[in-house]
Length: 252
Ligand code: NDP
Ligand code: 8X3
Image (cartoon, rainbow, N blue to C red):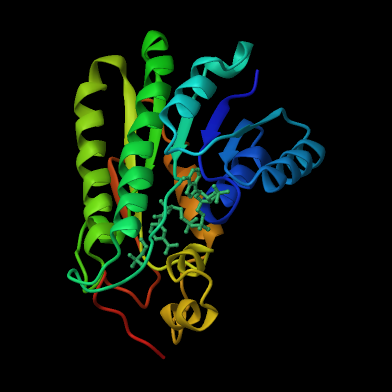
């Protein structure tokens, strides 16, 4: 029987790349996100290309009832999740602390912190009885280093770092691995979302860099899941070669 991976935020970026990588390695895949059409397209593509089972689940991670309703009613075999890639998230805006929009702050806290935690808890409850599982949380270099105008985004990612540590401790008796992956600048839809469709502002982030691609991060995540049962990568920072951390990058 194929292993099962559950991926939040699979309609774009790292999540979609992980769906392709795990499907190519004969995992059955649960893909989630808010954009139904993209979910359905990806589900059809993966099932046809890799001859695996795909279950698209359509929910907003901020909606607690929808998250719990979807995860607690997973049908049959889909309850036995081997790997969770807890990836859905976003930055909204990049402004000085005194000028940042409170709606942007609410969106980031509700998505990156509360939604992230709802998913992790609900899936961990399915893993506990089996005394095995692997939770992969998407942090960021912003989880390690605060940068100018990154205020609430950095705070939510620091919280992901803290909660990953907390999960690792509390889930230890159940042999559940918890890996936090912290990528630096990666060219996905992230900056277009952050700058609300402003293509010039989004492109500026990657100017003069060869940034990470979504596939680079998916390869790394997949690698973490291939290690023997007694080995766990707890915390992994991955940047493009031109970036040292949130502040230091060398542009061409
Ligand atoms: P993308 O914008 O390309 O993808 C984000 C994914 O998250 C989409 O599938 C989106 O799906 C989903 N998502 C966002 N909000 C919600 C929500 N409320 N409910 C459900 N799904 C949601 O970004 P990335 O792939 O780059 O980002 C993935 C993760 O990696 C995020 O947590 C991000 O913070 C983190 N990260 C990104 C970096 C980068 O430079 N790109 C670097 C470090 C970390 P949909 O809109 O369909 O709901
Ligand atoms: C995304 C990377 O540097 O924009 O988490 O915070 S950064």
